[in-house]
Picture 1: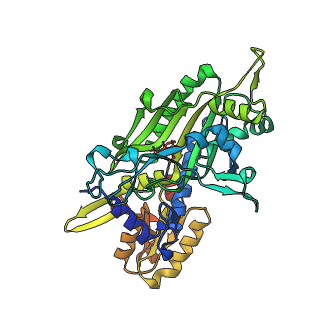
Picture 2: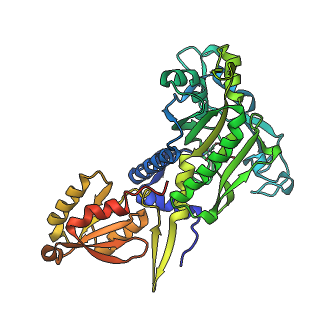
Picture 3: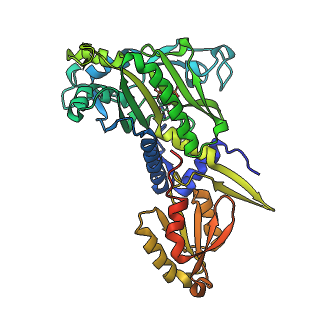
Length: 439
Ligand code: ATP
């Protein structure tokens, strides 16, 4: 049996087991900002590398990039963020609660107090502004980036000429983005400081439709490859009225959260809007030369963009399971082994057996797996902890191991236990865990 987790279940597990903490909790907390603990960092690293792996294909060039978090005003003027990156904001005059106007039905009244007394809807720019250096004026104004993509566009020529690549090729970036969301909510779903994993695919205008379809399919298959339930993932293409001003087509990968089907990733055909804008505003030519046709053109871009934290939350929702075993309930995170923070636990049955088990653990650690040695508490308690953090396999060393040189492996999901030779542990882990999710 399994029950669907609530957001509170996930938040509580994250705190209890050290995946994610509210940022600055000691001082009352910072809304929409979170810190990641040991297991959270391990799991996020796994998501980052699974994402990078998923972009690879023998016939596709994907270059890596890591841009600065802060950018001058001119960049955001050209990209349209200063003029367009607004959310509509409205306040209830009675209870003073603030909302994103497109998040609520204003006709129905305030979701908190029910009154229909509203302020005017105002446009609120979501970028964080700062000044570089001691002088505060127009020339020193800078913004924390609200998306990672622009740093790739403004480096397009640097990247292309230094790597001598030809169109088509992609540039992938993982990094922080900042949005002053009016109402950050749903934990890691809508944050003010978050991480994006974006890939910009530069191509000719006549191939962008074909590549848009290619990347939609490829991105969708990523989610099943990392173990997300395919019933809860879908691709939804945007209606014409939903499209951003620069986009000719956009599809969202959506997941069915407890709060409904919502965007997890956006895939957009951005045309040549970004490079054209930066060319126009910087006065620098960003076109490429087509030797065959003897013409110059500004490439089109197909973008795929997913939030690392939103994906992290999605994996937790998807994996969180309550199994009932007879009278007992057990909480287990059925994470795909490639995503699980700890791949295997090494448990001596009793403290007396620590030394031989630690010896085995040290030997396996040399192979580079993220594993844990755990001797604290009863074996039942240790199994429960590893179920809760999603460790796919627990190896237990008992008194028989001393003579038969075998060890018990417990499978997190099936609870089946088998005895294998101590010499076979490396191969066992290699076979079961090191296999990348069918990417
Ligand atoms: P939404 O409609 O949910 O606000 P968006 O359309 O503004 O998202 P994009 O600008 O397309 O989002 O950003 C790409 C991806 O970045 C999103 O699909 C999401 O995974 C992630 N993302 C965007 N905003 C946030 C946020 N405030 N907190 C966490 N992740 C975010």
